[in-house]
Length: 316
Image (cartoon, rainbow, N blue to C red; front, side, top):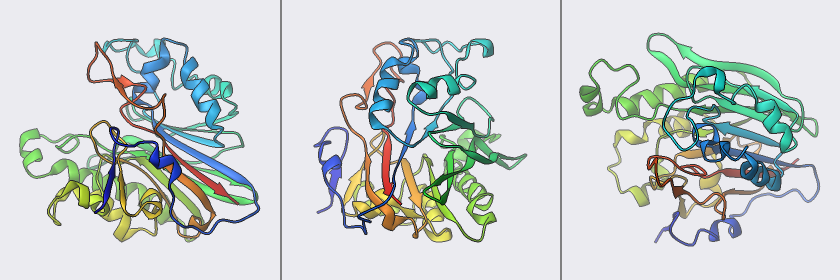
C-alpha cells in the first residue's frame, strides 16, 4: 500500500527517509532551495521579513529560487499596493544580502507572480521568458539562468503555470472549464518553456523547477483519477517529451509527498539524468516555520505560504 505523507500526517518522516542514489564521497556541496512564497512573502513583510530571513539563513542554500516573488498587497489585507510601494521585486538585492546572497536575477515580468533567483555565486542570466501573444503567453513568466559549481555549469529553469480551470484569456470561462482549458493551457506553457530552454541546447546540466499547478500520474495511487484524466497533461509532457527526472518521486517512489494546502503535489524539481547521481538528499521541508497556518482575517492566505519549500542537496 502506497503511503501518503501530507501536512497532517507524520511530516517529520520526510526529512529522514531517502531512496538509494549514487553518492560521491568527496566533492563540493551545493544546496538548491525552491519555494512559492505566496504574494512576495506577504506573511512576513510587516515584520521586515525577519522570520523569513532567519529561516532562509538557517538553510544555507547556495541558490534560492523564489516563486511569487513580487509584493502585491498591504500587510494583513487583500488591498493592492500601488507600484511605488511594492518592496519586491526591486529590493531583492537588499533582501537577499541579508541571508548571504550577493547575486539576483529576476525572471520574465508579465504580472505579479515572477520567479527570482538569488545566489552566493555569480548568476549568468540566459532568458526572461514571457511567451508570445496571442496564444503562447507564459502567464506568470519564467526564468533561465546559469550558475557554476566546482567547474560544472548548471542551467536553472523556473516557471509558475496558469492556476485556473479555464484557459488564459478564455472568452467564455465556463465553456473553457468544461473543455479542461486550464489543463491544456498549463501543458502549453510547460512545452513552450522547455522548447525555449533545454530544447534550445544540445547538451548541458539542467534543473527545472516550479509551481506547476498540475498533478502527476506517478502520484495517482493517491488521486485515484482515470488514466486519461486531462489533469495529467502538463506532467505527462515533462515525463514523455523531455529528458527530465522528477527528483522527489525518484527518491521516494512509494510515497506521495504533498506540497500545498490543497492536498496536492504541485511543486516539482526536475533534473537531467546526468545530475541525479550527484544528489545526496532531497525533500519537501516541513518544520515549525513552514507548516501552513490560515490567516484569521484574509482566509484565502496562509502563513508563511500555502506551499512548502523543496530542498535538493548535491555534491559535485
